[in-house]
Amino acid sequence: MRRTLIKSAIVISMDDAIGDFGTGDLLVEGNRIVDVRPSIDLGSGAAETEIVDGAGRIVIPGLINAHMHTWQTGLRGFAANWTLLEYFRRMHAGLATVFRPEDIYIATLVGALNQINCGTTTLVDWCHNNPTPDHTDAAVRGLIESGIRAAFFHGSPKPEPKPGEPHFSEVPHPRREVERLLAGPLADRDGLVTLGLAILGPHYSTLDVAMHDFRLARELKLIASMHQGGGPAKTPGGWEKLIEAGLVGAGINIVHGNDLPDELLDRLIDLGVSFSVTPENEMIQGHGFPITGRLLKRGVRPTIGIDLESVLAGDLLSAARVALSMQRALDNAESRQASGTIPATTTIPVREALRWITTEGARMLGREHQIGSLTPGKLADLVIINASDLNLVPVHDPVATVVMQTSLANIEAVMIGGAWKKRNGRLLVEGLETKKELLAQSGRRLVQDIERQGRAA
Image 1 (cartoon, one colour):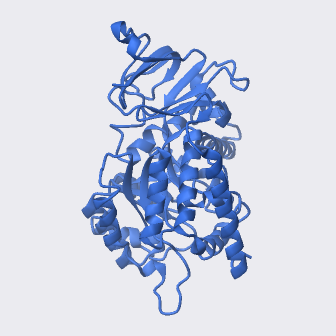
Image 2 (image 1 turned 30 degrees about the vertical axis):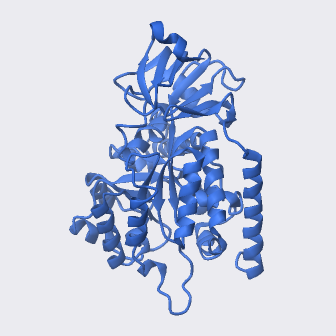
C-alpha cells in the first residue's frame, strides 16, 4: 500500500480534538490519513514510505469550493463589468445558448485543474448549462479527468423561451436525467465525483415546480441547492409553503440569500438549511452585502464559493479573505454608528474564515466524516504551503499566514485521496499547454458566435 509521511511541518488540522502542531508529522496510507502527531516513528516501514520534508511548510486540509459555475471558465473576465441583470441577459439568454458539449468539457476540465492548482481539493460544480445529456456528460467527464473531488450539482439552462415553449421557471427538474446519472457515471455515493441537484427553488420557479424539485431531491436523497436573490421572487411566499409541506431541512442549500428577511432566515436555520456565500461576486454584481455576519450572529457558519470565473479569479483563499474583511468592515461600521468608536477587539478571528472553506464545506456536503480536516481515518485531501516564501516569512501565526497572506504562488503541493496532484509548485498534468489552447479556442468561438447573433451587445 502506498504510504507518505510528511515530517516536521506546521500542521493546521482544523480538528479541535487534534489541534495544531508547530512541528508535526502526518502519515498517509493508501487514500487516507492514518496518523497526525508531533513525531511519527515508522520503524521498519520507513524504507517503503515516501518521506516529504515539511520543514518551512504549512499543511492544511484541502479547501472546499462550495459554489462555482465551472462551465464559464472559457469566458474568464468577459463578464467583469456586468451587473446581475446584465449577466442574466447576456450569459444565460445569450452566450450559454451557443455552448457545445466540447465547450462544457474543456471549460470544466481546465476550471477544475485550476481549482487544484489553487489548493481546492473538493469542488461543488453548479452546472446549469446542460440543454442535452451530451452537455451533462461532457461536464462530468471533465471533472473525472481532472482528478478533483467534486459534487456535480446537475442544473438546467435558462434561455429565453421560443414561441410555444414554457418559461424555464415552469419546467420541473428532469427526473429521467437525474436517474440516468445515478445509474451510470455518478452511481457511487462516496465516489470521487458525486451527484447533487442545482434546482431553481422558489425564487426562480413556480410553486408547482419548486414542490416537484424538492420532493425529487428528498426521494433520491440528494442535496438540493438553489440560488436565492436577484430581484423579486417568482413565487412570493414560496418558502413558507415549502416549509408547511415539510420539504425544507438538512440537505437544502441556499446560495447567496442576501435579501432573506430575518424571520425567514431564522426558520431556515432552525430547520438545518446550509448557506453558501460568494462574497466577491455578490458585491460586484449587485446581489447586496453577503449574509456572513447575519449567519454568524445566529450561531451558523457559511460556506464560501467562487461563483463565476467569467467575473473574477478562482482563488478560494482570496474569496475567504474577502468575506472576512467585508464582514469585519460592516461590524466596525456598526460599532462606530452605535458607540462612536471601533470595536475593542476583532469580531471574527481568522480561523473562522478557514473553517468556512474546510470543515463547513464538508458539513454542507454531508461529508464531514470524510473530508474537511486532517483527522486520522479521513480521506487524505491536503495542501502544502511553502511558508519560507518571501511573502510569508516570518510566520508568527500560521492560521493568519494562510488566510491573510497566502496566494496561489505559495501552494506548493496538493494531494487528493492520497495521490499527489501538484508537487513542487507544478500541476501533475500531461498536455496542459494543449488543454489551455483548446480552452482559448473555445472561448474565442463562443464570443464570435454570439456576436454574430447580436446577442452580447
